[in-house]
Amino acid sequence: MMTLSNISARSNQWITPNIAIMAVFLFTAPFWLTAVGLYDYIGLEIVIWLIYAMGFNLLFGYTGLHSFGHGAYLGVGAYAFGLFQHEVAVSLWGGLFAAVAAAGIAGLFVGLFLSHRRGLYYALLTIAFGQIFWFSAIKLRGITGGEDGLLNIPRPELNLLVTSIDLNNNVALYYFAAIILFILILFLWRLVHSPFGRILQAIRQNEMRASFAGYEVWRFKLAAFTISAMFAGMAGGLFSMAQQSAYPDVMAVHQSGLIVMMVLIGGGLVSFWGPVFGVILYYVARDILGGITEAWLLWYGLMFVLMVMFRPEGIAGVIHTLNQRFSKRPATQKAQVT
Amino acid sequence: MAFFEARNIHKRFGSSVVLEKIDLDFEQGQISGIMGPNGAGKTTCFNVLTGRYAPNRGTMTFEGRDITGLSPQRIARMGISRSFQIMNLFDDSAVIENIMIALPEFRDMRSNMIRPVFRDKMLEAEAMEILSQVGLQDVAWEPSKSLSYGQRRALEIGVALAAKPRIVFLDEPTQGLGAEATRQLSTLIKQLRERYTIVLIEHDMRFLFELADKISVIHWGQVIAEGTPSELQSNSWVQRSALGEIA
Ligand SMILES: Nc1ncnc2c1ncn2[C@@H]1O[C@H](COP(=O)(O)OP(=O)(O)O)[C@@H](O)[C@H]1O
Ligand SMILES: [Mg+2]
Image 1: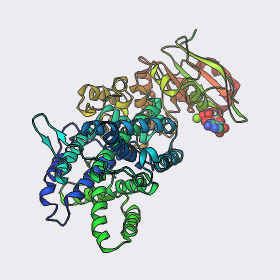
Image 2: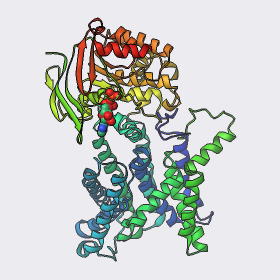
Image 3: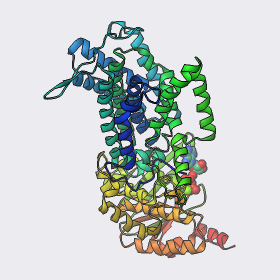
């Protein structure tokens, strides 16, 4: 049985083989997406949702805290980006900063209520707060535009010192988001092997032992929640650029449930890379199944049920098992998923 | 004033009184033993002394400082550490990581989000040193859930020692161990007495009488007898339960 908290032989390195593979896929995608029957915009969506999902899994998989209302922070990020463009200035970095900061503040605030709780109470509170944000987004018409949302959010250009890049092109926006995702992956990879990250994983395994080892457990839970909300905020900011609008639907409870399903199906409980598989599978399923039947979510739900029943370790778990079967090495207990 | 003092400790859960009125003194550099029948309140007493529960009445001082009602993490950071009767480890993590996380040096780096833990050779060496004290150096990189029962008991003690405690509370460390493992543990604790102040809850009387400088008997939530092992030999409760054990 593998777990997230195995010690990877390569956990000391900035760039592991898996990170390199990820980079290759990420930065070559626009060259082959259409060849495999997809399109640029889906690549952009996948990258944005990966930022969301990987930050979410720091909380969900690594720290073992079950948030079912995380869409709220993606939504807060999206609105903050849009409002910044409309009310302050048309600025890429200003907007993204506002998105991350607003989601971080929202996460910090909610986290203060959550972090002394655990288990079911924790989960229920995340849902309750998620509903509050969703409801507010619909009702605060003057700020959020109500059910219609904020429209006409511009895609500000990316100013590099000597030149500037127009992000109205989906491929350009894709590369911009992909670079952000890649930097965040490097950061997360360091984080989960750092003292802070190891303590989060210790808290998942045994909160009581962690407190008797001298750690203020609630502070770590609060930090994990806030960081994952900031990731959601970054995703939200990019999403409002991608959609050129921000609307309440992403904050709804069923949307927050989808991110949980993606992370679980992908294998986020056993692997750093779980969310990657989960997000890709979701979007590919949406496109392929969605092209065949309106009821594609039903089939996706069924897939989730089967996965939980027969392969609770998710896609990453399946890949890990296959890997061990085909490489000659015997499956030792120290075998790693990285 | 003793190194660690508990005065008039009263603890109840709802209407059920578990600790009536406990007074205990633990002296620096000694092994203090606590014995008593099952359900007497020994573990609850440890839970109060190490901050898991605040007492309803009474005070605790450590090196003259009042620690009554402090959280477990505050108490732990003052150099008070403990093992658990019901084992309490980070099961998915490697054995060595269970130790590393308990090291004060690791605690000092707790907000570092960048530095790779397993590149730190000093932390590793430090953890290996603790592991060899408890005889687990050969299984350092195994997941802790793969250990045998006796090894897990040893790891419990290792984690308590890793904190570099000024006083360490061990709750029935021999529970479930065979004769041979118990003997090894006894040898280990004899070695530890040079370096640590130890408080030991123990069911196995022979084990406790051999090790402890002073023993307190807890019954019905009170300390009913106290003294050196030889003084206690004549205590009627001790005699009765010793007889029971032999019979
Ligand atoms: N958290 C708790 N809530 C209610 N009762 C408890 C709790 N902890 C311990 N007790 C009760 O306190 C009594 C003493 O238990 P314990 O301290 O574990 O005894 P010992 O370690 O001496 O065997 C038992 O009757 C137990 O049921
Ligand atoms: Mg007990």
